[in-house]
Picture 1 (cartoon, helix red, strand yellow):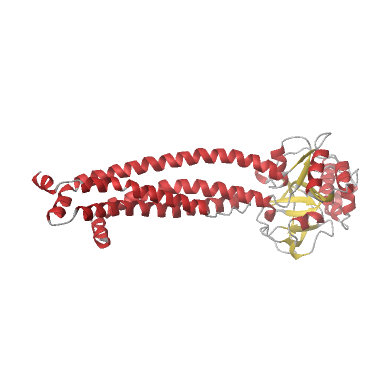
Picture 2: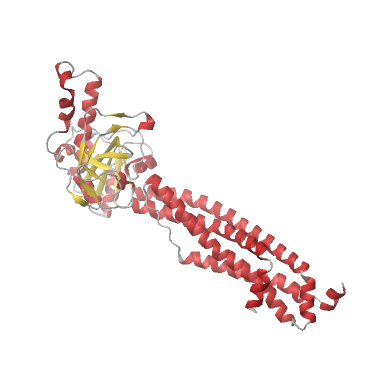
Amino acid sequence: MIRFVLADLGTRRLGALLLVLIIAFATGLGVLVTLQERALRLGSARAAAAFDLVVGAPGSETQLVLSAVFLQPAPLTLVPGEVMARLSADPRVAFAAPVGFGDFAGASPIVGTTTAMLRALGGLRAGHGLEQLSDAVVGAKVPHALGDTLVPMHGQIEAGGHVHAGIAYHVVGQLAPTGTPWDRAVLVPIQAVWQVHEHEHEHEHGVGAGAADDDDDDEAHAPLAGPVDEAAARRADAPGVPAIVVKPVSIAAAYSLRQSFRGHGTLAVFPGEVLARLYGTMGDARKVLALVAAGAQGLVGAAILLVVMAEVMQRRRQIGALRAFGAARGAVFALVWMESFLLLALGVVAGVGVGTAGAWALSAGLERQAGIALPVELAGGDLLQAGLLLALGAGAALLPAVLAYRQSPAEVLRG
């Protein structure tokens, strides 16, 4: 029977192939939506795993998380230095690390911070940490090796950024891979960021001009000379920072800290909670897209059944001849059902492959753009859904099979 089915489909291979492709793309759309939404949730949750609590100035919670966790550039209001001092001295805090940004080394954001942030991100894969003001530790995907020199730029070129004249960082370490946007970041001492911008501010306003103009290069390098003094970042009179990453000593301490630093000029957020709200928005969008995909699959399925039934009607003489030559009703029924179900099954299986491949490609593109590893994972529910589609296809294939079963060979051949 299988050989006969394959031989029969081979005589109309072009039509059969088109039907399979239509089913595959309709099924693949639903698979792509499901896998991509899950990949975004898993990838963003893993990216935020090292950030228990983020403290910033009052404003948008979402923007604070996008900037501090995902390193999306935005003009955030600075948190005063006394906030960092309070957090560092609080017994509920295991560590507090400032996060200062605004500069770039090529396409990589330069983040001013402290050694605690290096540990929170998983530690070093090579080299050593931030010991001198001119030291830089690069993420796993930054295209620079140990010993390279980086010239910081304020802002990005496409946004009208400009190079900090004469300032340079030296790559002394590399972070272990994190699968987050921090893999593309360059970490430097927060003091260096402050001094670079203070130095630039003085030059913009003519401070230090005169005799020093003959030796601009030496003066330009002066702000990044000397060892790192991380205690300076914890003083109340320290310059402000866009955000502070906080590691509480316990879950209870985390909630207590969030309550303490919400209001009175500060905003404390759990990145996980902010992401959960974003997931809710994405979930609503996914439901709409899933309904659209299901509707498309239903319409495609109905159209295919109509095509198959029309084909059965066109093949009435062939089916009548089979019956006249002794083929039993059951054999004709099985032949038509197997042909219809085989086309549907091939389309569903191919659709799962097409949807998975599409999700992989889309995730790879988003990872290159945003730096977040987006894992595409087929779950048991996805296979269950594919099995349900096959079951529905098996039931739907009964319609043309019954139509062929009920045909009378005598009437068909006489007509």
